[in-house]
Image: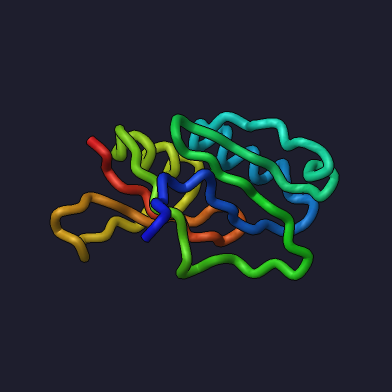
Length: 122
């Protein structure tokens, strides 16, 4: 092939209109991600962007929103027990998985029902 994929620049998940404060409460306040200013003309469309290390997540508004219950980003973290505890303390379900014995991981949902996979990065 004459081309090479380098990395994923960002992942976008959908959210309902007008729910930016709930996204901030989860992604910034619970998960500790930095809220990143959304440039115009994109900001006027609603939604909110976040970043933590090399991970960039865009929350985009969908008028007829349906949560992604199967499709999901897989986020590698250091301190998986700490993030699991923070999620549980904030009232979010943490569902540990042993389907891949060599990978320590769990699934959770954001406030809109979008599935997230959290993977132990050591």
